[in-house]
Image (cartoon, rainbow, N blue to C red; front, side, top):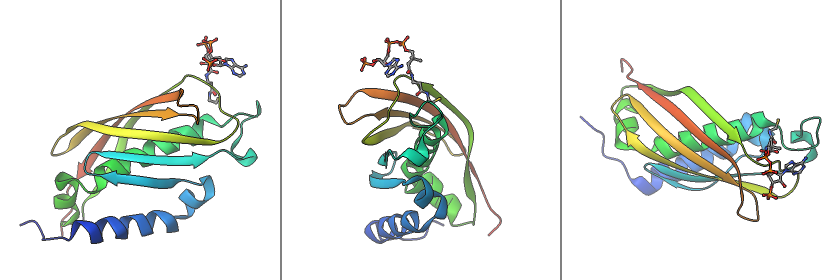
Length: 149
Ligand SMILES: CC(C)(COP(=O)(O)OP(=O)(O)OC[C@H]1O[C@@H](n2cnc3c(N)ncnc32)[C@H](O)[C@@H]1OP(=O)(O)O)[C@@H](O)C(=O)NCCC(=O)NCCS
């Protein structure tokens, strides 16, 4: 049976958790807002995140998309039901197309999950610069794995 939850409390708990995760702190990952099946997330460019060309490292953009995809899944009924069994969610495929370099300002990732299955979900992300131009597009597949709890 699905546990009754307060959506506002759950969201706040997840926002607080995102602020504490060491990897998110390292790359400056921030959650602007999120809900079931969507998220808006950001990272501000700083020189430590650059590749030898002086532009943001492709892995940082991939991490922004990967984490944004996770936030778009966290409050879905499908994930919360499996979470009750101590199940997990994991990315099984992530593809990124890099369209423009970025060497200043904030990059914003808008993620939507057009299909949320009981186990497999497909997400799409667009990352834009401060001028609103797309710098990358992402396509991720996530799997929800039931626990034994
Ligand atoms: C690979 C790449 C140069 C191919 O570009 P393209 O589509 O053949 O060429 P375009 O001339 O249409 O350029 C696309 C955009 O990139 C910009 N760009 C291309 N080369 C650039 C360079 N050397 N320095 C700064 N900007 C550059 C262009 O100004 C254009 O942006 P705009 O439309 O806002 O003016 C471009 O897609 C790109 O730079 N992608 C990002 C690569 C990246 O940062 N990867 C992650 C880190 S390894």
